[in-house]
Amino acid sequence: MTSVSDLEQLADIELQREEDEEEEEEEDEKCVTDAPSSVLPDSSHPYYDVARHGVIQVSGDDLYGRKQIVFSSCCLPPSHQLNHRRLLEFLKFTLDQYVEMDYILVYFHHGLRSSNKPSLEWLREAYDEFDRKYKKNLKTLYVVHPTNFIRIVWNIFKPLISHKFGKKLKYVNFLDELRDHVNYEQLVVPADVLRYDTTRSCERPPPRPPLPSQQFGVSLRTEGIFRRSARVQIIKDVQKLYNLGKPVNFDEFSDVHVPAVILKTFLRDLPEPLLTFRVYGQVQDVLNVESSLRVSRCRHIVESLPELNFIVLKFLMCFLHMVSQQSIINKMSPSNLACVFGVNLVRPRHGSISLSDLTPINVFTELLVEHFAAVFGSRCPPGQVTP
Image (tube, rainbow, N blue to C red):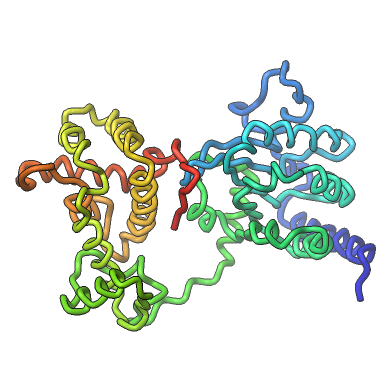
């Protein structure tokens, strides 16, 4: 059985090996990235001595309105130039501003070296000092570009880490995978990390294409999803099962369009539309708003919805945003999705929707899908869940 001290020694050896491999491709003096001038703190900052290196950054909100906290190893100066105790205090100082709400941590591992890495004892101390208030609202810890060193360190700390906290750890091998989970446009990604990711991406094996007949496991890539119909009797049978409170197994139908039609039918049959009757007039006025201000107007409209309506709408739009990101394959752009879903989300209290009313409804829905993060990011109710 391998002892903790043996694992610590193995971790140091592995880190040194990884350094040697990298040094064959780049000069050692380029290993530390300066903080972008746009994020440099004022000299009066209480932790200026640490903050000026740009190791820890608050990078806006993710797709679900949660704060994004970034830790970049490549910005760590040599250990003799940085007080790691102060680094820990600064990390807590930063988190203290956000731990009362949900947040995520993004750890960029590239650039960690023997010369700048905090000790394993420092990591133990950090985990011990982060009490429940820090761990409870941390939703995910993304470890970007993990190496064998990370996995060895994880084995060292595994006995100390709760199962619940361990489930929050997610390894991300490439930056494009990170885009699916965070608001990448707001993320502060050091130049060294971008270069490293580009180099690694060249060695990445191409993804296996789906089988011609494959439906499950590729639902967001299915061409024409939400535009095609399903057998009427099947839809009625599924509705009956739901109304009787019985479980529905969509695998039995071998047709991804069945759940797609069920979703549209559910929205269409609501006694009051998801967006409520009250906002119909506001949606119709969207075309009268200057183009640059329309996203802001959409945010104002959806934030005025009752909480339950907002929660469901945010979940739905997040899902449709994900579908639209595969539009090259599934042909369902934000515009096409808006044409399908718009009339199912809002309608007048009396009468039907006229042809002239369709355009503002579709434009409004397209903005919700395409600009999901901007429209929904600032409001995150306690009961909110996401796809």
